[in-house]
Length: 164
Ligand SMILES: [Zn+2]
Image (cartoon, rainbow, N blue to C red; front, side, top):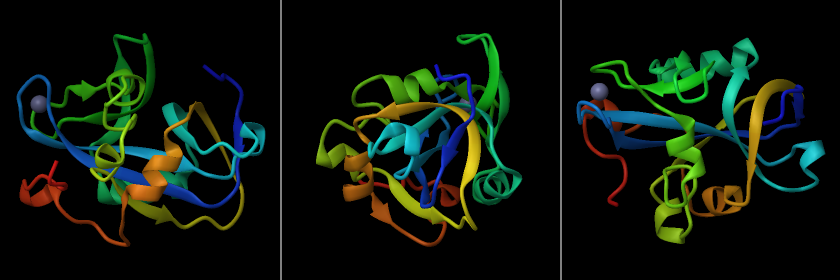
C-alpha cells in the first residue's frame, strides 16, 4: 500500500460493471478508477484501489453516476476508503474482492472478462493528487477491451451491463 499521495496526469477513466451483492444478492454497480499516466508508475497503467482521498471534482463526477461509491469503513482492512456499497443493504463489496483476485471485476485476466467493464473518461483540467493504492498489470486489458462510453447505462434498470 502506497501511503503517500500520488500524482496523476490526465487521462483518468471511470470503469464500471454490475455485480451481485455477496450478502443480499441485489444487482449493484462496482466502479474503479484507471489512470494511464502516472509518473511514478513509469508507463504502467494503474488501477486505483483503497482510495482514501480524491479531488472533489473527480468524486462528484463518480458519485453523480454511482451514488453507492462512498467512504466506508472496511473490517477487512480496518480503515476507511471509497468503496462500492450495495444500494439495497449498504454492505460493501471490498476492494480486495474487486481488485486483488484474478478474474475479479477489476482484475480481468482475459479479453472476455475485460469486456464486462464500461469505461468512461473523467474530465480533468490538469494533474491531480490522490491517496490510493496502485494496481498494475491489468489496466491495459481494461482500456483496450472495456466498452467505451460517454454516458451512464445499465444498472439503474436492473439489467446486467455486460452479457457475461
Ligand atoms: Zn446487498
